[in-house]
Image (cartoon, rainbow, N blue to C red; front, side):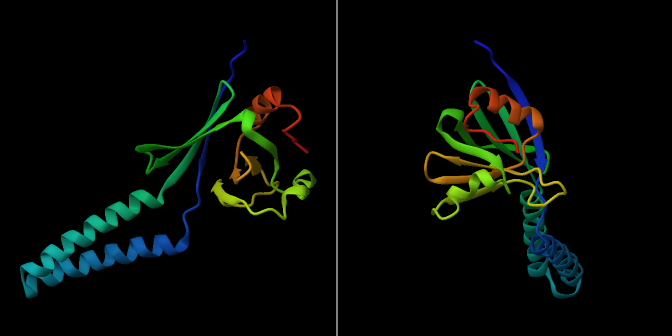
Amino acid sequence: MSESYVECMVARKTPGVLLLCKYVLIGLTVVAFFASFLFGNILFFAAIALGVAAYFVGIFIDVEYEYLYLDKEITVDRVFHKSRRKRFATYEVDKIEIMAPIKSYHLDGYKNRQWKEVDLSSRVENQPDTRYVFFYDGNQKIIFEPNEALVKCVKNVAPRKVFMD
């Protein structure tokens, strides 16, 4: 029995709206703090609450995905702000219907079906596009961005399901 272990990290691009929200909260915190000297304690507590909100927004908009392949399973963890890790999902290779690059012609037969789409990629279209799609268990479309070693390991286990175009 051969066991393979591959690990891959991908940082998600932060949406501009969330960055704007974070900076607006920081600005409101500063304004409320300095206004609390003029108008009293109620604005000081508002400044504390806004500061806490800015802190948590900052943590949850900085997300990385870690893909881990081990023993016929792909495990996806979300890493928040390079400090908090949370298990997102575990996918068994046996339940994958097809896995191919996002713009592959092999996926043409799957375009007209209704799928629950889960985007675990960086959300950036690079040149060449390194994102892959796999259809899992008949109801999920997972978009992710593995490295070449992870794709090769999955292809070794399920060669008829994985296409590298």
